[in-house]
Every structure is written in C-alpha cells, then in structure tokens.
Amino acid sequence: HVADKYKEMGYRLGQMIAQAGHNLVYGGAVGGLMTTVAEGAHDAGGNVTGVVTDHIARHDRQSDVPDSIVTTANLAERKQVMTELADCFVAMPGGCGTLDEVFTITAAGIMGEHRKPLYLVNPDGFYDWLLQELAHMKSLRFIPAEESYRPHVVGSVEECMEAIAALKPPKGKKAATR
Image 1 (cartoon, rainbow, N blue to C red):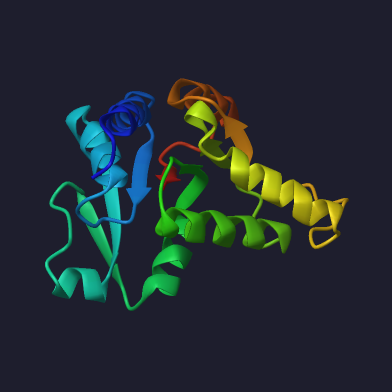
Image 2: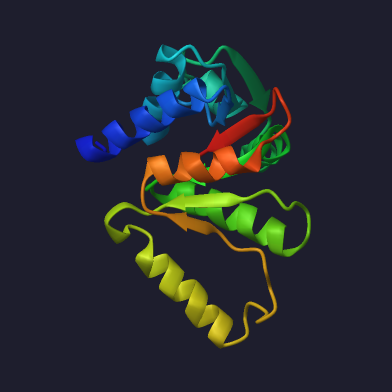
C-alpha cells in the first residue's frame, strides 16, 4: 500500500484541482495513489473523468469515484485518450504505470505531438534518480542537446498548482494526473 504521506499529498492535490475549477482526468481504476487524488477532487466538488481499459472494466477494477467513464480497448488507447483530454499532466510519485505515462508524454512532446506541460511532483527527491538518468542520456546525445521539451520539476503539490494556475487554460479544459 502507498505510504500515508503520499496519500495525503494526493488527496490535497485533488482538492486543489477541484477548488481551482479544473477537471481531473485519470486512469479510473481502484487502488493506488490516483484513487486518492480522485477522491480529493470529488470530495471538493470537482468533475472527475476516469479512462479505463476494457480489461479493467471487465475485472471489476473500475472506480466508482468518477463522474464519467471513458472505456478504451487497451492501454495504448487509454494513454492516447488521456493525452487528448488533458491540457497538462501531473506525475505524483508512483510505480511502473506512472513511469510508462511519464515517458509516453515526454517522448510525444519531444516528437512534437503536443506541447502540453508535464509536472513531476518530486517530494523528498523521489524523482532525482530519473532526472539524473535523463541528464546522462542527454550528455551521451541519446536526447538531443537542443531538445526543449522536458518535465517541469516541482517539490510539492502546492508548487504544482501554482504552475498550473499560471497556464490559464481555456475554461472547461481538464488536467490529467498520474
């Protein structure tokens, strides 16, 4: 189970997303930190959209928190739909699914498929190892030196929301988190 300090941060992030008038788009499954973010947004009166794969729905792992559910055929389509629905992305500390989505969003940004910001919430240096590895890849020219798309690193959910507030997205648009 996810440590309480991360759940508290996630719940606070969900509340702040809703209180700022943003909609939350997330993976829509039960368990994990994102369930807590969705609960925070929902409890604060926010609109929550879950994007689940057919597999998740068939195996009764779909959360009852979202106000609306989008069902996709597979994981690749799920990530595509979340990317299309969101104006920005937030990666909280997480596991393999989080890293998959961080790399998918980053690679798509590098390829020019989108210019939507990705925020890495990095409490206690959670993502420092990843940032060091990305710098290493860039130093070896696996990532072009002139590449400008990269995650924005923030130390807290409060810092993250300050950065999102500065975006001023069009009314009714959604922020996706992972």
